[in-house]
Image 1 (cartoon, rainbow, N blue to C red):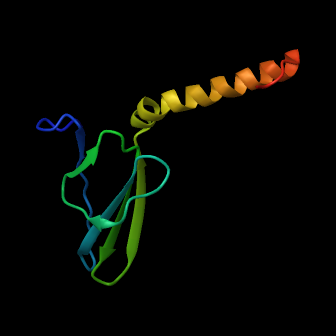
Image 2: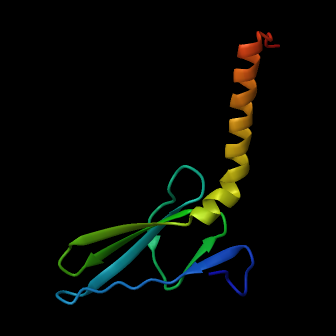
Image 3: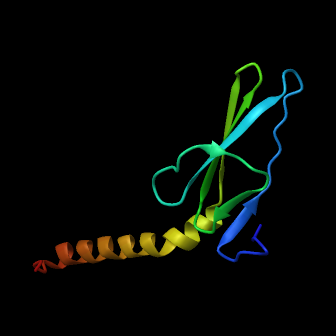
Length: 106
């Protein structure tokens, strides 16, 4: 959800539980462009920049077992990458058109 106090952020609440040994810690990392951020301890809710389109949670229980889950925000992906993808498609289409019509490149 949108952060009511900071319009440049969004908030993501999560729940992690382990009935057997209990949860030792939860880590989170995010992806805004093409690479992941570093792992950091997760607070609940996690505050993220509006441009984040993927969030990776890793829960570690007291026995040392891990579980990982990636969540995607496709709306954010399209909002912040849509213009980039549209530009790349347009560039590709112009290149194809130039090749088909025999126009020489500069």
